Structure formats: structure tokens, C-alpha cells
Length: 178
Image (cartoon, rainbow, N blue to C red; front, side, top):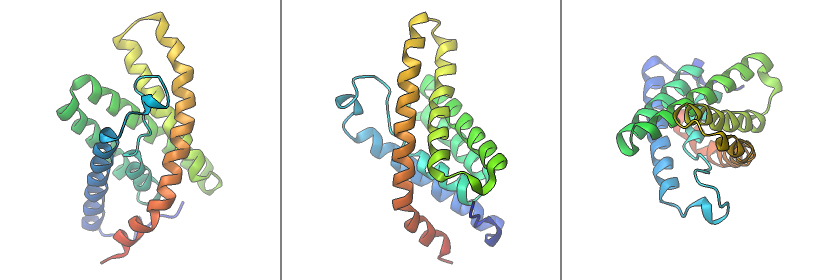
């Protein structure tokens, strides 16, 4: 993984992390204002997870600490704007996603692609949310929803990885400006 962290002071890393968090919030707001994916997929709760692009960039090019910080802050933002259940879902999905992607980066180093990491991250985001929902609602029909979440995780992982590739030049310009 290409790390730009070594070229940044602590202050610049903090500012860049804050900017990526702001990007994550903007992408979350944009995604929530778009027409629902339920027009394409008649299943509630399916989203692309556009704000995870900022988390992935932080993880891939900065370090796991900024990525975890953005995931946690996103969860807190969701608590304030959409309530505690939605915030808990965002937090659990985001933290599990970053944890698994960090583990995969540690194990596979440069032998794993951003696409594979994005897909695993997206699937784990859905799994983290599913675990929390299964504690809140103990309905046996809930397990029928898991395959849908896994498939949507693959699609969302492909979409966010592709979008990150297009947004990457802008992020890199942001980092390289001194």
C-alpha cells in the first residue's frame, strides 16, 4: 500500500483526517439526498456507502488510526442526525469494516487489491450492522436478509472502489498541496 503518512507532520495528518471526515459527511448527505436504491433493489436499507470512500482513502494512504477515527466520528454524526439505533449501526459496521480491512492489509501487504479490500470492507460493514440488528430484533426471519446484505456488500464494494479510483487524483492533489 502506498503510504503518504511518512511525508506528513502530525498537524498535517490531523488536518487531512478532519478534511476526509468532512468529505465523508458530504458524501453521506449526498447519498441520503439521492433517490433511493429501493427503486432498483426492492430491499430496505441497501446503500452504496459513498462516505466509506473517505474511510478507505484514509486507511489505504494514511494509516489505520485516521480510518478508525473517521469511522467512529461518522457513527457519532449519525447518532446526532438520525438517532441512536442508526448511529450504533453506522459505528458497528464502520469499525468492523476498518478492522477487517486493516487485518487484510497486515496479512497480505501489497498482494491484495483495493477492489478486494473494498469488497471485504463493504461486506463486513453489512455484517457488523447485521450483528447489531440481530441483538436488537430477535426474529428468525432476519437471517433471510443476510444473503441480500452479502450480495449488496459485493456490489457496494465494487462501486466504492471504482469511485475511489476516480476521486483519487483529487485526494492526492489535496495531500500534495503544501
